[in-house]
Amino acid sequence: MGFISILGRVLFASVFLISAWKMLKHSDTLEISDSVVEEWTEKLAALNKHVPIPDGVDSKHCILFSIILKVVGGCLLVFDCKYGAYSLLIYLAVVSPILYDFYNYRSDMPKFVILLNDFLQNVALFGALLFFIGMKKSIPRRQPKKKGTLKVKAG
Image (cartoon, rainbow, N blue to C red; front, top):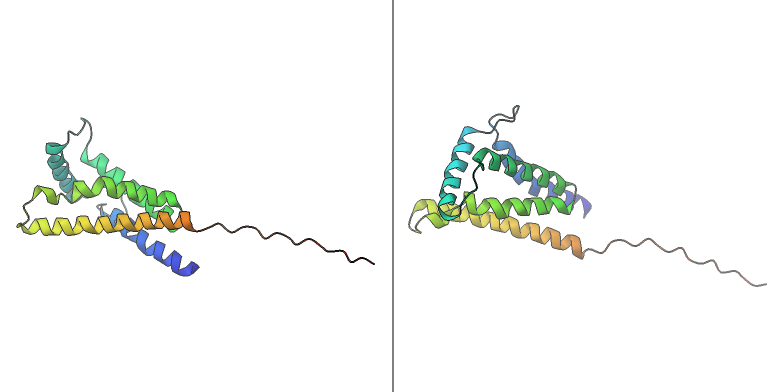
């Protein structure tokens, strides 16, 4: 059971760790890819039509915040820490409606189906993280064994 649990956590966390790594321009530098900045700028502009975004919030700041949440959350999840799951929950709850804005498209448009599918995949990941947190709370901790009392023979 222990090996399977570790393997599952590593595979699950790799989704977030690899996607954070892919947001960078090159693996040896910590520079954000231009295509990622362009996509986020477009998505934040679309979001700004529905929800006012405060001045000073830049797409690069949002990207950096999402990379940090994914890396920290993924690493903590590998080490079986519930705070990693909370970090990834925050990431998914905030970023999914922004990046996968299917609600800005009509249902007969091809992009609608792609965005809705990606959004629903993130909803499934969100559910898996909730399941992980629920399992952590439902598993009882091992109690230390009580040492038996010694019986003294009379006589």
